[in-house]
Image 1: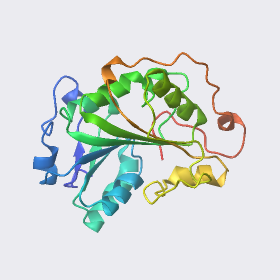
Image 2: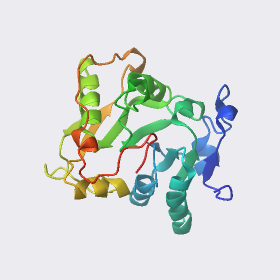
Image 3: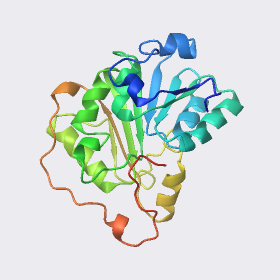
Image 4: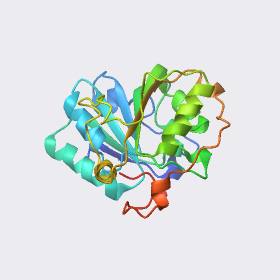
Length: 242
């Protein structure tokens, strides 16, 4: 992907203590327009990044992941289709604040992130990460969470509740509840696998406010039973995967 003009690959040590050269300049220097910027964090194969770019040419989409072999699929599709509003950033999400300036991002998609059952600080909806997003997400910016994990859904829902954030949309069984729309109908590789095994897809949509003052929920949440129930579902991994 080093030859792809729409892919940025930055070693961790390059942005560990310094902002990236595109910090605050994505619209001007990368996309050459002033359209809203939307991130897909943990983009995997990039199905959402590419799918949304097709639907909304008036917005800019950036898929972020550390696994280049996964990202290659979406990056190649975007290149072959000539999608000028789709880009990819290969980096660790822990360093995402070094790439985007205050209010530079309008929306964030979290599509099937690892629930990190034993390590709450690694959950992409933890107070740690929400505080990081708040540094570059515009005031009242939107976050979408789409997940197969009841644990991840419940944890995030409780976090919003304890911090007084009312979800804009809260669906614990997206497809059976009849809420599915064209955007949410984009399905990743692993989402299709979960659905084949009868695992409901959950969806939360909420605005992020006061991200630096959020507190963790103090509740006990049962881990997802199907992950160890021998139902033929591929075991969870240690990185985001689609």
